[in-house]
Length: 323
Image (cartoon, rainbow, N blue to C red; front, side, top):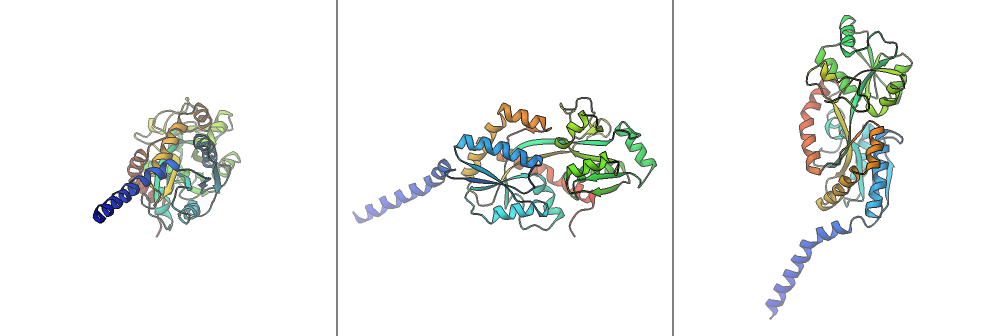
């Protein structure tokens, strides 16, 4: 009898243990969730985080609070999340460069895909190459020819070293063997202001920052980095129409730090796939020059593994690999 009782208790404990992850996932979230954005407030990443966090709150009937933790190229925000309990109540909304570029260009205390795990690609955006509205070139080919005829004279603005709009220009320059001078600023808006003020010649920046200035005639768009022409700028050709196979697309999305239960990751990803189909979200993103995605964790992981060697080459072209 005693042996039977022991066996019964053991089986019950094993059954309970096996059911705990699923039960935990069903209970999550049972309280406020922090969405950490490792960049300053007001930018496109911050806007996307707030739009999607609001929808997640409605889906789960819980509060999702966005907290901005900028600094060290985004590493401070990741560190903040890593120091929190690994229970899914502190999650991240980040750019893909946190996986692909930052660990190559700066000292960080996390290992991509191990300590930082993708949950869902929320949206993708291409880049738009703009010059002053009175610039002496109106096509990408004319710009390239001018740069080759005037080595070291053209300047290009970026939102900072190792940012997307530094790497895409370095990639373009590397492909075409152009000698241009990099002028880093503190963000995409500051880089655009420099083009408007004619203190720099070119900026190859995020579509979310540049679609409206192009439409309003403040700057002249020479090309976009996406494989197909952007619906927001249908008359602007792709870089690939001049330089075959050129494509550069960035993405923003949700991630968690290592240790967060897989059941929570799947639960969150499922909700984000629903958010991505929300017509209002699609419209808001489109107005920012962003395509709503809502991927699975596996799709996000596949995208990162495909992108990592490409970004590694770009980091070398830009000369920003850490010593």
